[in-house]
Length: 241
Length: 123
Image (tube, rainbow over the protein chains, first blue to last red):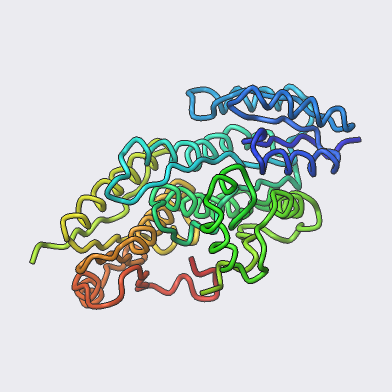
């Protein structure tokens, strides 16, 4: 007996690997979606750890990709009990330097692709299923990220509306990570990173597993009475000066 | 003094239209603030809460995020952007719009003119 199918996007990234590992251990049959073939290695690793996982190499910004992912999940002949719209990108720049392409690219990946995939997966969602959208603390406003902030704030709005539409059959929530240890933050100058960490009340950078734990909570019965909410995983940064 | 840009959320036809509307808003807001015009984004309060179509909720909250991101970045004198949330069919009161477009208050604020948010999440 499995926990049902879980579709996870951005599965080859830092968050995706951590989320996949947790959901695999929960007994979900994983459909791991990513536009990079590296997702094949992620699936292989999870299978070697005893998890049920298959890779699905798709760029969700391409026409028809959401339907192809839904077909892959549907072919497993089990209800989809979890959809985690985790894939996201940044293309930062000050407003004066941020061009239209950088805006639309971020919007396509972070917002429009999750909206299309949610529509495509919707008929497959089982009773008691859960959708989790990956927001960001930056969705509250952040310097040099007009594109990213717009996309993540919009995704929260989408989360609320979808929660009202899909209840009581499915729950829909968002996770909003703050500063997390990923390849992107490791590229920051040490002094810049230290300054950012100094603003975190819990006095450390987050880990991908901190985020994955929040996702696990939101897709399992532990959160059976929670829908339409944003769980901010930022060490308290969203409150601090 | 140049006229402020007042940009109103419109109903989104589909997911593609969400992208178009937010992109057009970004381009218009960027041009306005960089040329010294104040900006007011007018959104539906019920869409901020997600009480309507999912596409409209995405647009309303996307515009709110855009407003906040632009406000965070704004350091030039006169750089002023805010949002007004109301609920159709109630019009936005002239007094609120006059305040919003005047640049008198702090930048980056959401001004609400309806009560649908009371007892609910405050975006």
